Image 1 (tube, rainbow, N blue to C red):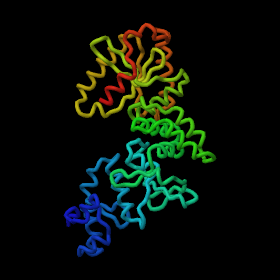
Image 2: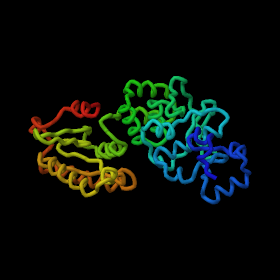
Image 3: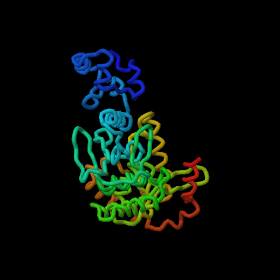
Image 4: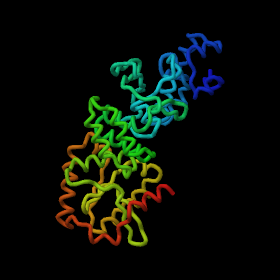
Length: 331
C-alpha cells in the first residue's frame, strides 16, 4: 500500500503513525509486512515513511528533519530541538548530520540522557530563544552555536558561530548567550569559540581549515583575502603573511570535474603569480589526518617565508578590501 496516498501522511511531511495506519484499515500484521517488504521505512517506533522517498532524501538536512518530525509525532508535547538538530535546521553545520541523533531541550531535566535515539538536554533556555523554522521549534542560532562548542569541541563550535554570524547573528548576541552560561561545563571553550568566530569563513570546511591554521601558531589568519590585476579577481579562503590556505571540498568538482580542475589550476597559477605560497586543506586533513596535515602545512608555510618573506606591502595595489566580497555576497 502506498503510504504517500494517505491524506494524513501528505499533511505530515510524508509520515504516518501506527495508529493512523490502523485507522485506515491496516492491521499490525499488514504494517509489519510492508516494512519487511521494504515499502515502508520505520523512522522510529510507531512512525513510518515511504521507504523510497526516505532513501532519496538529502542525508544532511532532509533525512535528519524527517527523523525530527517523527519525534514530534511520537511525543505527547511539541519538543524544542537543540544542539545538532537545531544546527541542522538553522544551517549552522554539524560534524556528521547524516548520523546525528535527534536532540531536544527539556529544562526540567537535570542532565543529558539518551533513549530511543533521542538525546534530551536539561540545560535551561528562555522562551524568547525559541524559533519556528520549517514548522519545527528550535533553540535560536546564537545559543545553538555555543551548545555545539560545549557538546562537540572548539572548532565545530567555532564553525557554528561563524555560520551564525553569516546568518545575521551579531557578536554581541553570541556574547549575551555565553554570559548566561556562567558556571556551566566548558564555559572557557564557549568563550574562546566566540572570540574566534569570523563570518569570513564561508563554509563549515573553511572554519575547520582555519582551525588548522590557528593551531600552526603562525599568526592570526585573515579570511577572504582578495586579489585583482584589474581584469581577474581571486578570493583566497585564509591568509597568513604571504601564504594562503584553501579549503578544498568535493562539491565544486561534482558537476563537471574536468572544468573545475582546470579553473582551480588557473586560479592557483594566478594567485602564485603574486609570489604567494598556496596550501590546500581537505576535510580529512581537519579530522583523521590532522597531525600529518599540520606537519605538511608548517613545511609549506616555512618554504613560502624562505622564498618570499612575510610582508605583503608590495601587494597593496592589488589587494581588494573585504567589503568588496561582502558587497558581492549581499548582491
